[in-house]
Image 1 (cartoon, rainbow, N blue to C red):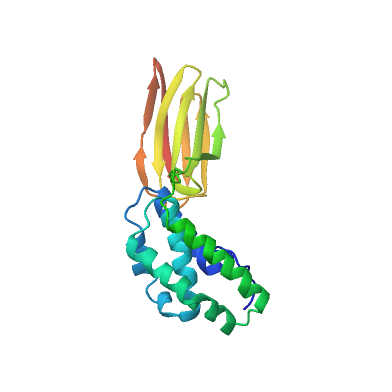
Image 2 (tube, rainbow, N blue to C red):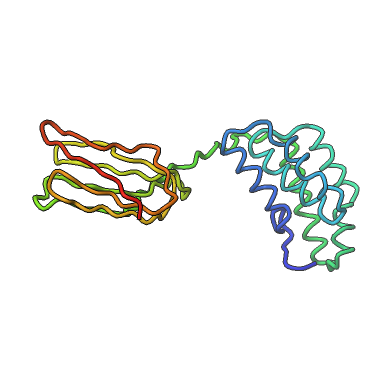
Length: 224
């Protein structure tokens, strides 16, 4: 039978659909059971996989107080008829494992027969923002800083931006959508800066000057 244990989630098949259910659940999607039954319709025709899929799905549904009666009745039939034990025996389980699995299924069915008192709450994914510096430069007098960075949210690239900041404030200068692009910033003098960029970068924002109070900086662009 390969690597397994007798628990309801003691195999890759039941774990996969269980985790898949929670991925949808934590993202606020409903209803999920019907959707998963449709998505796994091909796998559910496999006699060796069907029970584990239904067990994993029904466990997740029960934990979230979303177990439909027809799914419960199907699980009850699988357990009461001995079908799951027949599948395990066909796949090579010995008597000791069969007895252990039988007890697990008995307890599992008992759990499913009574609605859970406190359902599992949705776990919203925390937003993780990473700003990866591409270039950080200053004019000779160091009164401001020009930073270009790639922005990632939950490890997914979103956009690249360039900002000029003084101690008291500042603002955005440029935006484009190409991670890890070759881009250089050269200060020609204290009030003029050149942005050199690789071919293929398309700017969605491209200011040619910025002013903070009376301090004006000119920005020119040059393709490498």
